[in-house]
Amino acid sequence: MSFDLSRRTTLAAVLGSVALGGTRLAAAPNDHTSPQGSKPITGSGKIDTHQHFLPKVYVDAVGLETLASVMPNRRAPEWSETGALAMMDARGIAKGVISISSGPVIPDAPNVLRKCNDEGAAIGVRHKGRFGLFASLPLPDIDASLKELAYALDTLKAEGVILFTNYGGKYLGDPAFRPLLEELNRRSGVAFLHPNEPNYHLVGQPPESVLEFPFDTTRTAASLIFSGAMKAFPNIRFILSHAGGTLPFLSQRLAGAVMLNPGLEEKIGDPNAAIRQFWFDTALSMSKPAMAALMAVADPTKIVFGTDFPMAPPFAITMSVDGLAAMPIDEASRNAISYNNAERLLSIKA
Ligand SMILES: [Zn+2]
Image 1 (cartoon, rainbow, N blue to C red):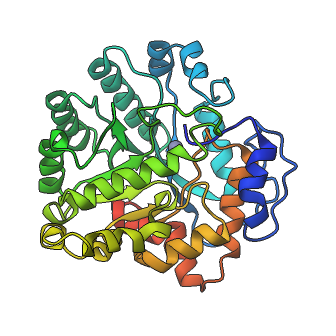
Image 2 (image 1 turned 90 degrees about the vertical axis):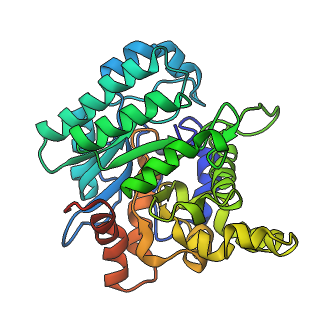
């Protein structure tokens, strides 16, 4: 999950006042079938690299009640293939790369996630050209994850894998994940980094998805930079969710920390160059401040469009779609974010 679905007023306060373009907030919370203010789409459709699915095998394994219990609004998100396609058609999205979001601990994860990956690939076959797959790995079990990585990429031909920002409080630069990073680097793999709940709970704060999710994305990005993983594994294409969390805003502080530590730059290289190695998606982040920070530090050829469907409510997806249309950039740059960059990253066509 990546957003509080229940508190529309809170969300409006977070995003609405800074949204690009004229966004209407009159959408019914669970109706994803209407564009609800999105502008008509011209040219090629968008590629949505941040889209989730909840196959029956996953919901059955985790349990609807457990799934609901970890959602900020205590309601399990609703998903179906037809619902996903309707949302995509209404929003001018040609292709969605689907993944299982972070959530409750999965019992018998290697077995359940294998079935989820099979189902994700089957959805792509059933709706040719409409879906790709970021396959799930049963981390933190490294051996099982290496097996699943090979299966997902070699047999299912998945576009990449989804990794969560932390597993039990360990961030991805931790030595525990090194064998997986080595293999991803060898394969020049794509790793979609998705926020997870941190390993602590704060009292009196907004739901984790509001602040802690972007912070956790920042932490794992910093962990990859400071551990030297970005330098050691330059072939991995990491996608940071939600415009990198707060990484662009904090990039100068990170660079400063490197300057204060003799020897660190030798280990990790230029921290700003490391930040530009990352790819970034725009899910739930299409606001003037967020995009201004992102565009200031990111490689513009490495920004891809995302919705966070079905965790994001319709009005937030409208903000993502309309915000992209209203960005003060030329048409080629807009098309790059809409689909060109994702086509190049994933070797697919919109
Ligand atoms: Zn998400």
